[in-house]
View 1: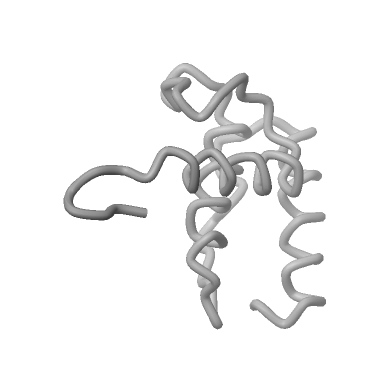
View 2: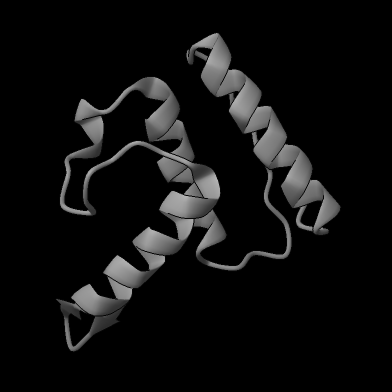
Length: 88
């Protein structure tokens, strides 16, 4: 995502849009400070950042710790989908 020390904003925005849809997180824009979001949305963004790297293996340690019940359910659903796709 960097070229000559500069962020490629178009690429960042494209990746953001893709994972915002896949992970269903509530964040108005990629410029939004993540620390101001709910714990569940913060967690989804962290997972999205790792998924954007196209890993072959993703190890999650307590991925739902400290988030509300609804976000836990969504996160477990996402983890199940990733496992079915062969990521985990």
